[in-house]
Image (cartoon, rainbow, N blue to C red; front, top):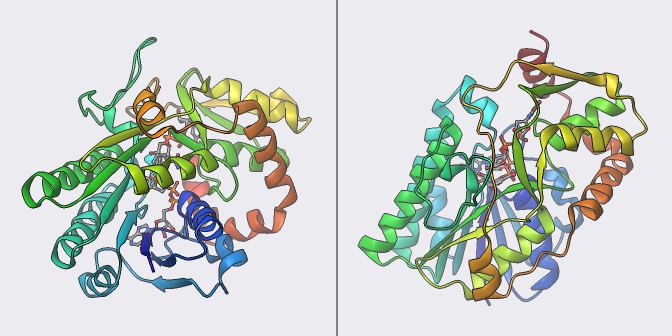
Length: 334
Ligand code: NAD
Ligand code: TDX
């Protein structure tokens, strides 16, 4: 029986991945280790919580005792657990270094101590920094992170690399572009704009709104990680991107149109500090070497995603209670 430890599996991408894998591999055993921070949410996992081959453990990836015990009993470790929001890393960087860098090292050390078939680190295109109007990030683009968040992710990637080079730990690193889809916490661009538009609140666009992100549907991210887990060459990095570059303003206008709301809701606000201008991923390597193909076009994906948020007002209501209100006030109602 193949045993997989997934960390951060109660967050946006992790929960989509846990459900994708349980459905695809009923013969594998899955353990989800998550600290349930402000964005970890067991509601995301309701559909599978009673499955016999699934267990949830509430715990921190920095906690050696918990981690050692779980890794000892696992064949594979996939690390999604992280502080993931750039704006929060600007106002409070410390927890980003603690969770994203130290947490990764604790996991790696356990993997080295107890031996695993493979350790997969879920990283981000933001480690490469920012692009001008042309060009793409490849796996050999130098790391030039610009935010405390991306610096913490790049640091973690380097520790993963060091465990491969020094200890021969079997690893892969994946670096994907901006994900979107169901269950994304409404601090990130797409769910925040959908949520605000539905409540006729202002839609805050940083700077001139012309920053570009390359959007990847979370389902396509999950299929890519599955391929890397099973077929990725040890020690390699794989970029994952959707070839869906859009300016933020284009995304916001598209959401307003889909919801039948007026563009007067748009409000240009102060720019994010150190705001990266453009991300774009070259995913030739994973396409050619592992045969990955995304299923979604951005047009179908965003339509389906907007519909999901319309169909799940209770989920949105639940995640926006509590801490979210304080965060929103601090960020947008200064
Ligand atoms: P998320 O913030 O929705 O979820 C993160 C999860 O990790 C939460 O469930 C949280 O409770 C858990 N967590 C945080 N710190 C922890 C700790 N110390 N110990 C245990 N659990 C902890 O994030 P997401 O958007 O699902 O991102 C998942 C991973 O993918 C992250 O590593 C992120 O850097 C990476 N990533 C995300 C995107 C994106 O667009 N969302 C793009 C590229 C890479
Ligand atoms: O209110 C907003 N207004 C706005 O203009 C917010 C929340 C964002 N933006 C802009 C900033 C970015 O240019 O939208 C773009 C996307 O912002 P985020 O959703 O915060 O994502 P980003 O900063 O690009 O980072 C995301 O992709 C890479 C994830 O949060 C990271 O975890 C991932 O590594």
